[in-house]
Image (cartoon, rainbow, N blue to C red):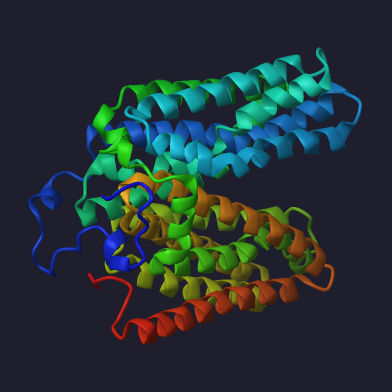
Length: 434
């Protein structure tokens, strides 16, 4: 790695070693896929991401039940404060990239999340709203390191062997899917028994437990090899433009997230339209979530093979077809199956994008690349949610067709970019094909 300000401009400079030829696997691949550090990593990831996944639901329920002036509007504001600090993600990620002991940065951020969330929940209705808002915003600052920041350390946990990385990325993807189900479910189940405060405190406690598990990891697994070689924020952001696979997958992921961000809104309306029962809509959303979790587990058990960027672009095309099949479903049973398949394709695509980030981002900017791409995805998903809320008034099928079309455009943009890059370079790009 060169000086922190040296920015690779080609795929070769940013890529890691090519995958081994077919039929020839390095010794690392033959070892057990799940090691003790990986188990601790996955447990920590599940804990902190479940805390993050359920915090918004729990905070909204607590605010509304507290009787605090502002009601739903205040609940929405506090929930937004959990995600708004993601704008600081690149600077927080740079801190992780340059840390001599990444465990301290990650564990500290998880602790800040847990303490901020618990303090905000306990003081809601007992202290000025601005003080509560400040605590919730402080908790939200940890968000980028709980998602992309933690995922960026996975290569250090499992090593450089491509097969081991792909399998671990599948399990990492599964922690996101599990968090999206377990976090809100914990709030609903525990809240029905104890009221809304205790679930939020329980989520804060899981974040603290996740911090303890991170501290138990080997220091070398959670740190950049050469902290002094960490890129500056501006240089790391330039990587997203100058490294061809990162640029193409960033754009494709952003456009695909517009569709994914609205699918839950559309599901609720579409299910009700098909059956006439209000409960049918949420069931479609559940089918999508279960499919997503199953897809993540599938690629953990059967890791993706091949060059990551090409896989990702191909999976974007598959996702466009899956969303289109949801729009074309003639009845409710087929709609359930289509939404489940859409969830599967979305999870496998997400795993492929993790592989792209891991392979084409240099160690000195890895956390920043992971966090920035995750942030762009979140913003695009928010746009998609708002767009779906508008288009669903025309009809849920129309809204899904628009989502599928946007995703198809993502494929076209990536292919055009690839063709133009080849023409400029005079040779194939995108890295070696595994």
